[in-house]
Amino acid sequence: GAVVSQHPSWVICKSGTSVKIECRSLDFQATTMFWYRQFPKKSLMLMATSNEGSKATYEQGVEKDKFLINHASLTLSTLTVTSAHPEDSSFYICSAGAGGFYEQYFGPGTRLTVT
Amino acid sequence: QKEVEQNSGPLSVPEGAIASLNCTYSDRGSQSFFWYRQYSGKSPELIMSIYSNGDKEDGRFTAQLNKASQYVSLLIRDSQPSDSATYLCAGYPQGAQKLVFGQGTRLTINP
Figure 1 (cartoon, rainbow over the protein chains, first blue to last red):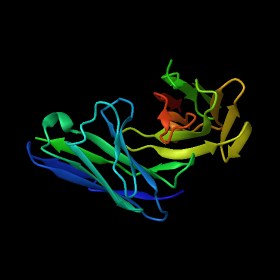
Figure 2 (cartoon, each protein chain N blue to C red):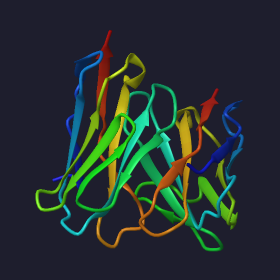
Figure 3 (cartoon, one colour):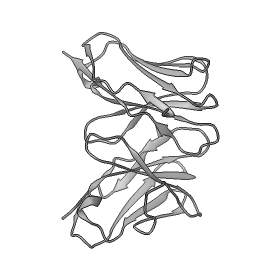
Figure 4 (tube, rainbow over the protein chains, first blue to last red):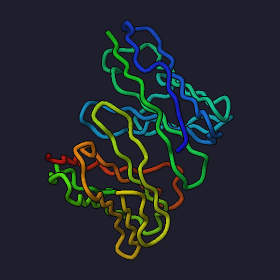
C-alpha cells in the first residue's frame, strides 16, 4: 500500500504556543488529505478535508482559525494548532487519498501534549 | 441512524478460529468499502477494500459485500493473537468525498 508519513510523531508544547504537524504522501500524489483527531478509547473524528491548492473544508464545530490547514502541494499538507491549550492534547492523524472513491492511507499519527 | 454501524464488541474469539466482523450502512448509494485495523495507540491501517458485490480474499482475510442487504463483513481465518485490535469499517456515502467510519469493533483473540 501507499505510504504516508507524519512529523513529528510526538510533541510537547506549552499552553499558548503554536504547533505545526506535517503530513506527506511519499509514493503517490494525494489530491485530497484529511485530518482527524482521536481521544483515548474514542472514535476517529474528522476535523477537515483539504484539496491541493484550495481552502480546507472544516467539519462542524472545528474552529478554522485555531486549526490552520495548508495543502500546498500534492504531497504535503500541514496542520497548525494555534494558541494550543491543554484540551487540544490529542492524537492527530492525517490520511491521504488519490481522489475519487478509493483507498485512504493513514499516517502514523502525532501525539500532542499541551502543558 | 448512523451511516455506518458496527457492533462495538468486545468480540472474543479463540486462537485458530474464524473471527467474523459485521458492518451495515444506511445509504443505498454508498460505494467503496474498507476495513481498517487499529492497534491501541496506533493509527488505522488499511487491510481490505471492496468495491463490488461478492467476496474478496487476501490471505487470511475475506471481505464480503452485499449491496442488496447493505452490509459488509470481514472474516479472519486462523485467528492469531496479533489480530487483536479494533477493526473499523468505512465507506463513501453517495456524493461524499470523505469516508464515513463505523465506531469500530474491538476484537480479542484468546490464546
